Length: 131
Length: 96
Image (cartoon, rainbow over all chains, first blue to last red; front, side):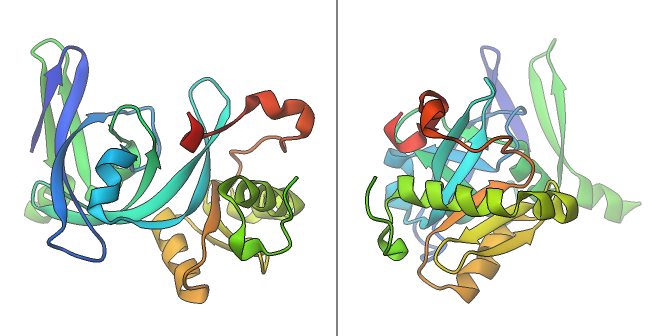
């Protein structure tokens, strides 16, 4: 699996799947945010048509040290050949963000070459099984 | 402040306030036993479900309390309880 640079931002294409209807899904280009510990953050505009399940509200500590409460949903995410259950924070507007929590769930190791602008996700589980 | 007697009909802001109160009532014990894990709090029963995996904690809570909304927080991340004097630093994602 590969991502791509857009300027200095790393973009990946994820397929988001409704937890209640597997035919309700959409591929979204999201920004990889290695400073975010959560799984995924979407806007209402993207989240509502995907019939994600609202489960509550979550308090987050953000980069400036302040606390923000977001609506929290659950859904499924497909990246490469893997599909995993994911928590998804939603907000009225802003960037679509993929946090390191999702990378951990997917079992991918991230290789970033800032000079040649390449991003590769290595499936660690496949690497381990080949050894 | 709005009446929070019927917690099942609590607004998102009330859910945060109630959840935070329950978290801080149990903060020492939670941080001692479950630091870094996720707490999913059902505010009516004040039940706290913890797990290292946030999704698993939510699924356990949904199984125990179907059709409820929960307050979720990573244990150890909230340093101080918000008070009326600190309202300027409290923000809700749905109003940003």
